[in-house]
Image (cartoon, rainbow, N blue to C red):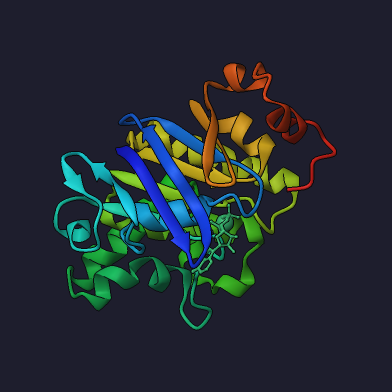
Length: 239
Ligand SMILES: Nc1ncnc2c1ncn2[C@@H]1O[C@H](COP(=O)(O)OP(=O)(O)O)[C@@H](O)[C@H]1O
Ligand SMILES: [Mg+2]
């Protein structure tokens, strides 16, 4: 995926100020930065929910527009809220896209649901439960399983550890890495969680006020001398 000179403003506020990035196939790429830096707006551009003021995003050779998504490449996003429907079972939530679009027979959907649950290391019986019966960490894994029904080539996570306590957050981080290794899916995570970023990233881009101020491996980011990045890497920083 390539991002070229991506710019976006809302009214007078410039939120993305000319982003340039190349994300490699199969890597875990983390966009890290304090809250308000433009991470979610960036993700919304990747999935074609926002139209850039200038610049472009390409996935493969296709522009990342609303129309291209679905027609040309398979992409999934796990939103911060998870977005599970409490009135449906876990299995119904995971299979919803397939059943609503009448893409598969019920037996086929059941098999796909079991496969996706096992990819996030959940037992098949979890499918019979309702989201409200699960812990926050398990709900997050179900949300990931649901994202996998399209067999994505690219999976995006917005703040996957938000609202989870730190221990659970690390298990979700391990799940993201495990999934990346087992399926080879290109993985983009945006987060203000420094421990998550350092725990999972092949490479990190640090976004501040809509600009990239550092890009590199975990070691390279740790070694950066940028004062605000250094501040972010110390415990006191409040995202
Ligand atoms: N639809 C919108 N309309 C106006 N301002 C927005 C909109 N979406 C985001 N913003 C502003 O853009 C900035 C970056 O937001 P966001 O990308 O959500 O930050 P974060 O890095 O925390 O995900 C914030 O100041 C936010 O208020
Ligand atoms: Mg956000």
